[in-house]
Image 1: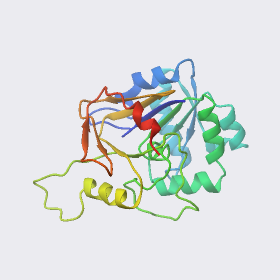
Image 2: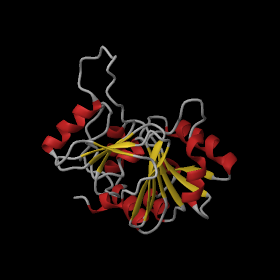
Image 3: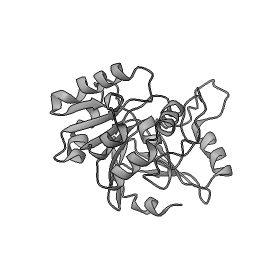
Length: 235
């Protein structure tokens, strides 16, 4: 599989996807036609137009999956699949109700490059359970695509000692997840991404790096550039 899983789609002071455009080109290889899955937001046409405006100047052609008469067939023939951010519950609901989980999984495991950002990164995991999003609706299942065997928390935020917020920190919420579910969970900070090429998994992006949580050990800092291939053996 070839995966590029972005924590975020917009970096401060940069345009949409601009911070990752070189990595997107590298992952795409010869692919120039991107099939965009816009179901994490309500306005599919406007969302697809936003993605097209960002990627077409770089030589890509973007088509929204919602425009296809046969969505499963469109996925099977796609050169590259991109699932964008938004609300993960809405996205997972749409993937299940439209019968798209298996078509996407089959295409990507068959070699179609996959790009995800935020919610699109969440759904590459086995479950949506480590999303940050409000459950604005109830999907038929929390099951996601399972393109990787562990969970990711995009937009991971470190505890702010100066904050007056008295609720749970992100780290505490992940710890609570691990009390009920097997790990690990990788907290991807803004500007970072995971790239999978077959059995090789690498953390990339800004020096902010990531934080790895597990039941068995204290949270571990992971530097950008680190080889995380051992996580592909997680269960």
